[in-house]
Image 1 (cartoon, rainbow, N blue to C red):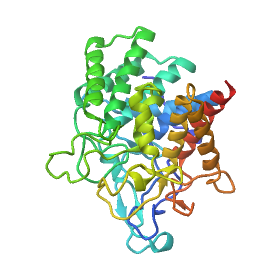
Image 2 (image 1 turned 90 degrees about the vertical axis):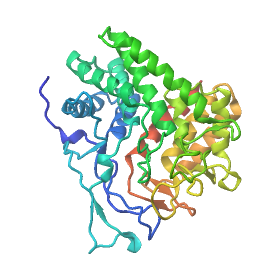
Image 3 (image 1 turned 60 degrees about the vertical axis):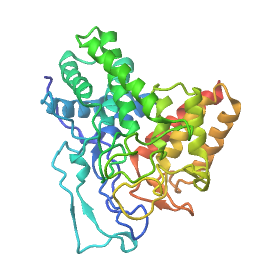
Image 4 (image 1 turned 120 degrees about the vertical axis):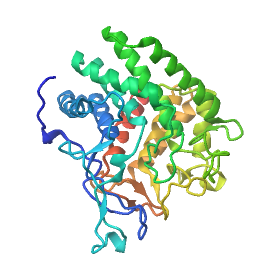
Length: 385
């Protein structure tokens, strides 16, 4: 193993605040002053996109330290860490304090550290693949650690997990977790072939194809014309939510090359998500909720706003589909310009936006700005073409 030293100059936390609510007076208050592997992987991608190779390399060193720490061949990666790599993020409440506009509880720490979120392997392997391609070759010692992670995905992809939105309810077979597991295997195979690394290629390939077939068979709802949030709700004990609930995370399918951006199933999913909430979609004034609280239960009380991250995902999905459909490209441009109007006077975004355009949730939120960079890069390139 090569020596590693923490360089805190190149860390990106999810947000620099804690307990700013997703709606005033609700209990949806979280501590975001930590570094999620998912955010870190998207950060590497964003930095490479805009030419900040040195910064991307420094952040990759941080990611390397995390997968090197995971020396168990059967244990999952922790999904979130302290900025210095701390793994103990025990969540507790400060009952003697109240947050913004009297919202409680004020939280320190984050229980998501103990969740199973299978999608992080896809984001991590994708960032490593891109880093190897555009910045610096991956070492063999790193490959041995990464190979164990791909093997873990092979053995565990078909388990229910807590999902990208970190629901505090029953685990489910989330569609996003499944297709991001496909991404982990796909990028593992690509990296192994690119560098001629030793790997269990036949097992990885067979598992990757099995995941793809299952997602296409079980996650797409013909009646709704869209990929749904999860495919274990109908008939499972304790599941009372709509079996065909939508989820904006499906917008990542063309962005990670799981689906062609112009595939009829993808186009109909985009159209379903873009419908107003009053018509069964997830849109409000063009912006997107991550899911409908009327159709799905996440184990929490209180409303929330539209997710800025998801709105920028929609911009990019429309952009990619718009390469062969000028109307969708025009829609992408209009939505992007609309989203720019929801930043504050410094061009910064919170996690969510309320019905009156007010900022909701912790601020500023890194994930939103990473999706903004990706959407801007790809929209600019498409308009330039």
